[in-house]
Length: 231
Image (cartoon, rainbow, N blue to C red; front, side, top):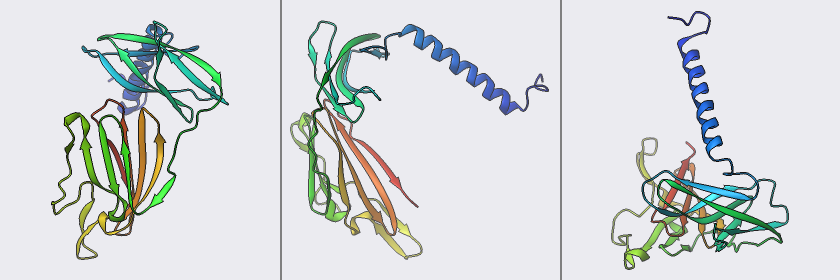
């Protein structure tokens, strides 16, 4: 089978995969030489429709006591925000095309507003698309999700037996169903700027700690929820 001198079949598959990935990366890098080089950022749209979305670029090591201004190819200033060593901005890209943005590094650091960490009570995150209120007294469930782009539609049924976003399951060692709503949760604001709102909720289901990171971005109908349970 031709593998006598190359190890196992799995070794051969790994070798072929590595070669394919290296060739693909070389083609991509060659076709987009300014994607992450110098003071320019190039955003590529592989879909057949024009897109306007918030994108994120890592600027590790380049933001010491500096912030960034961003301009499109016509010289117009683009809304952007810096969090840590990452740049967020709203990119508009034509179908099957790309858009290049110029970065200007200037002295000074723009600080973000932050509510820090809170335990119990309610907390609301809000942007142009959603207003979401979390009830930390009941495990950080969503007490209200108002969709502004749908005429202020409320997605949470206040009369439901189950709460929106609670985690619930049967624990045989307890002999009953257990819910995350039974214990108080804490909330920490991770990102709070004009483009991105992100919070982290920590709580327990039974004796097991969990973390949920919720993110909303400007102009997007997506509510990104990333849960982790430590079993």
